[in-house]
Image (cartoon, rainbow, N blue to C red):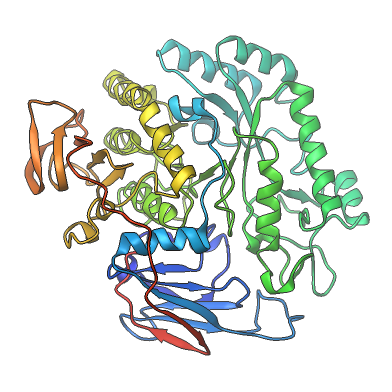
Length: 549
């Protein structure tokens, strides 16, 4: 993932840098897999201390390097640059081969209600100014406006101090009673949790430090980093140590059990939050990603209602992986269209159980020159674009705008619920076969040259094509339909035979262009992929690729 989430990535840029899970450039997920439209792919082995460059060292090239340099451990006793280069008949067969041999597939499904009805988060609506009174007010407003829910998530800031896992009773005088009241309105209740302990949380921080439960750098200090240090020196729980992971797990479980909380939104997890250069338990050749794997797997112990945001070789987990925060803007620079381009990227890296970021973006990235609270038009187009993705997540409320926004938002939220079984079936197909839940258009015909570069449309499974509006003030767009018989919004009276461009499709503010494919119109010609060549190369490489992923 990147902030400028261009798809295909042939036109993307990345400065030569360590290819690790990191906060910067939205790099929470950085799998070592590159796929091109000719059915060729590269997989760089996980033990490589990898550095990557797109288009800067040499135009139209991707460059791989291996170095014993930060953030990789200086304690490694060797370095290597090893990668597999596969040639398959087409891009779809190549990806299926990569899933089978490298990426893997989810081992199960997340909670169905999270798919069927929206998550409601306090974050964008209230930021850190959350209180028990505001949570209750928000819950009542959701019900009063006729929206369903999967859960209401209490986000930052509910703790006495970051890392205590103790409720601030000044803001939440009786958290247990509040949870009971919210549940009485028909909600489930979840809460935001992170892996940090700020040093000004004296008792808990001292306990963790003295017991060796915090990540240390190679100099033996525990100075981690994250976005909420509050003037302190934060520590990061060392999940690579089983005793530390179990200590943290039990403390989180005690929190949710004590207050009747149903589940958890887990934040952070990227390797860059560790003290640099970190010392981690486990195979040193997989450093610094040992902690990403260990943290996410500890979180997954809490069941199928959780969400995480980071990953490295954790595609097997049966949980939602949340997109990094979006900005409340229109562009491909972390704005509205990137919920689609990022979904495509995540799916093609094997993270098919995608939880899109909050509808309308988070509205708080004031470092971004274009950032602001979402406009009515941006908010509605965001709702529509999200409709056929696996889950919908609100925070900014539709009633912040006007009645029309409420009506349109409810219309598409209900449409999402109507298709929940179809979405869940696509997720089950991912569990069974490793197929993307929301593939790019070429999934239906990998030989279709037009479909290979379409970035502003997406599929749900192989049966629904969605073409959202991504430009401010636009009320018409061209839609490309690949091979198949397509019913305009499922209407059997409005039929299109693909491949075809539908020109000037009218899409006023209340309309989302989408098409349902007749299931017997295109036989699935996919067969078990076979490799025709494998190259294993050692050394510094510059590889010319026409890259789709």
